[in-house]
Image (cartoon, rainbow, N blue to C red; front, side, top):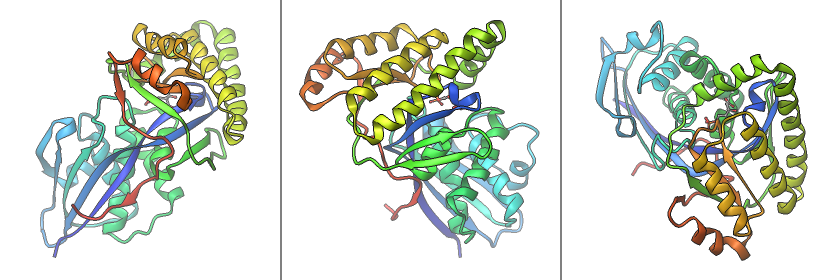
Length: 329
Ligand code: PMV
């Protein structure tokens, strides 16, 4: 009898500290209620197991291969890479012999920069752990997820994965021993706006690394300042001091601009929002496109919306729950 599980994992937004977190630093990241849904079916009766993936958001329709191939790929590339890499990592620790069928769909699509790759990794590992009764703790899921992501893109702080697994809003410290600290807040008055451009995280992380090679002292000061911004932001967030947090978001955006990852479209959103009374606005993530986030109180929300009506405003809420089992549709 095939067994199956349906799970979902949230997307994420960087509140403060992106790029700095790659340099053994810290960041604040929040999970968003735009989720990646995944159904995994395992059939242990098969003698030569295969993997089949249906993931329309990344263009996979009945994509299939012998399961063994997924375990030992020299490089994980293309739209199936994060699922295959997660399966390989899980199988090394919890060997199984079964046909796997995976179907995904996301509330947000793969192009908005809301963390579809990390949500896919979190959801795949979690669904495997449910179906094969592995009973993994969030710490174990996280360690396996970091390995799965590294096998695909060779870099990454893991902060987006932490948001997908733990959910909520997190202070994340990326040096040994890694710290993932959930921050207790009830709400976060954010507005999220898509820039219209798709950014490549890996290329922008490399771009900053090149700048750092050319200007080590200058760039390390920028990164150090970001560490302070994150620490102050953590305090302001816990105190629900939105005015202070907004100012720190503006400062972080300025520092990201200094790192060369801002774009005209992101800057236009940020400036239009601030001009309309937002408390703070910044790009979120690696830069080069994707989304801007705006901290805005109720009194100015309508005005900011009007100023950005020609842009794609995303209907997402911050501080969403982490990866979890869902009832079948
Ligand atoms: O572009 P995103 O949303 O995947 O965010 C990348 C954030 C970086 O700090 C630049 C990289 C990382 O792995 O943390």
